[in-house]
Image 1 (cartoon, rainbow, N blue to C red):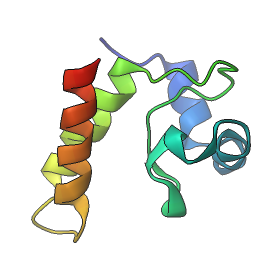
Image 2 (image 1 turned 90 degrees about the vertical axis):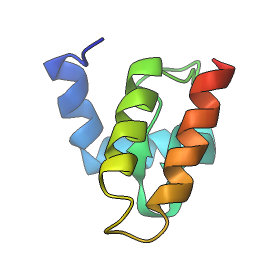
Image 3 (image 1 turned 120 degrees about the vertical axis):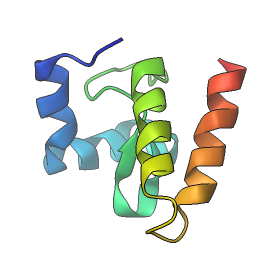
Image 4 (image 1 turned 180 degrees about the horizontal axis):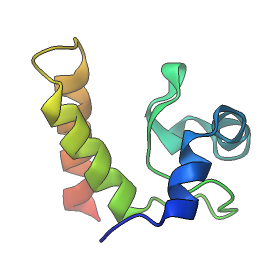
Length: 85
């Protein structure tokens, strides 16, 4: 379950992240105030959560949970969303 290079470029674009939050709302990110941990592919009109992005967000949050405050809660939130999907 890899993210394609084209999707990766879209996710890294700040303008597209702003547009994602306008279209889908705060549910498109696990940390919406900082536009971090996207879980919806940009350009998706249905605003459906992508399992690959959710798993990537979980792994990244776990990686930095001891170094950055609040990342532990993000990891727990991502884990619970993965279980529900």
